Length: 380
Ligand code: NAD
Image: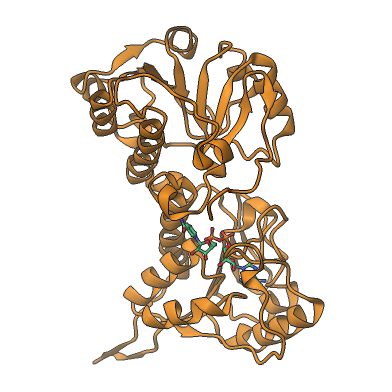
């Protein structure tokens, strides 16, 4: 099978869905790879490096799409890109079908079989293709680096001849994949790190990383386990308790990293305007939930703002792209593993097996129909 990789057209997107190494691995499965000229440049990969790995270089997206069986990319395709696809061609990409109904319809109309990397189920067998996790891990780390860069002070405490410097205090809200990566980065930079999540089972993980779990006294068991390990919306009473706790912490925190998400819903607002106003000047909030509306009431997606009381709020939505070389390496590996599952014979023949739980869940358009949302998994 011929696999073609498009360059990313979304402004500021630096990642690419293929590396020379992943091309070599795909070659071992019987596939040949092609890429649009210059597609890897912003991730530090030249056409020459691809060519050395046996990748064919096409001058533009049009000629590439006309010559390959499967197209892979990072960001959801634009409607103009969809027009380049052919009936029966397979597309693998982030799609976010719940938010992109028009795109889904266009892909169906075009007769494309679409695999959404964001729909890969979070089960052990699929971990190697779990691009949401590999990207969230990068985002969590990078959020702390951006916070440190904007904070303008030490994270770690120091005792020097010129005086004593206290360690920074960091609060991480939401301890999923991104939150845990943020906790790891924050602790390793020497900050006193606190973390909160509605899922009490993460307390042990938080503490094993050297951070302190912010414990909330509440009679009801927190409702996190209700949706297969994901968080469910909190009850109003629980939310009030949580906000009261955050209000208490706000004046004392130098950095707040928010990562709280609930599948299929806008991000819960957990860091309100009055909490921002209670923070010290120079404090930094990095809102990793900005793309889904933000956990902080004042976040502006894509922007860095400074409030009247001198608090910096970062709402960037491109953290993995800011680490494009490694993000591309990890994403390309996720793609390569998915293609391996689509090639059970290791003979270059694509078998789009809709009986396979992982393939079925991730397929959002197939043979002229929309196949999203998927049925429940057969095996959890
Ligand atoms: P996510 O991005 O959906 O959410 C981030 C975090 O926000 C979650 O930990 C969630 O509990 C938390 N959150 C939601 N509402 C909150 C609130 N009001 N206050 C504070 N925190 C709140 O989550 P994720 O990072 O994708 O991971 C979710 C779960 O899935 C985790 O248990 C993770 O370990 C698990 N997971 C499993 C696999 C696998 O088995 N293959 C892969 C990835 C993740």
